[in-house]
Length: 233
Image 1: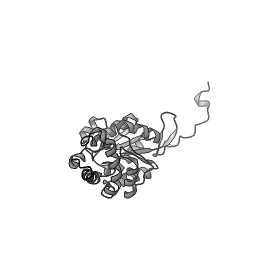
Image 2: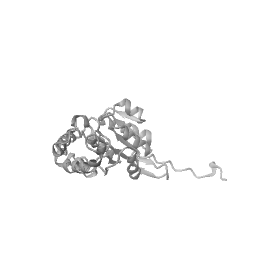
Image 3: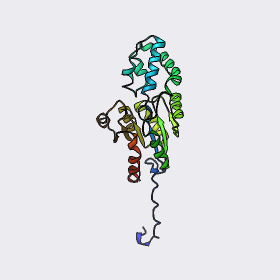
Image 4: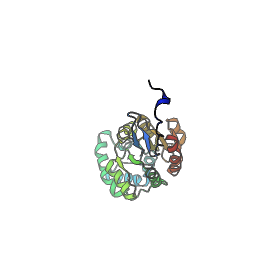
């Protein structure tokens, strides 16, 4: 075995770029990918969803407490509808809701403060920003297009641990969300869970669920990312 002193001096190792991370499975470098939830993470969907539930109530004649419904956003639509409709009617009512949604909810829904800046922070670091949400995917894309938020990929119809599949496929090492279900999705995907206390779950709930980082809002995300990337590299 050749002694280290007899070998040619090794070339200095290149400093890793902040936007790249080491792939633990294969040792390859890969572009940093950050996943984001949609409702109450990137967008304040309460006004649009509230209006859509009221319209659905008028259309079907069923009572829906829209004020209550918008305090528990995050889980799939069917999980809310079962509180107001017989279980056997939920699939058809969900289809009706999704069909009504674009004309009622899209323009009524603003971006949350810091949403565009959070996406831009990832892009400025050379990374990819993907949206993984429980919302019906075509409607999720309508929201982003209306608000001018350009994600590298949008994957819908996934909730909690189901989100791990998309996060793994996209190579996301960070997932940002507002719900304990988002924390579970991140942890199932072995991604860093960054939680924002802008949805129905407060900071204590998010920490108790296992969030690695809890931010008050997405406005805090760019600074957190700028601190995280050098440490991660």
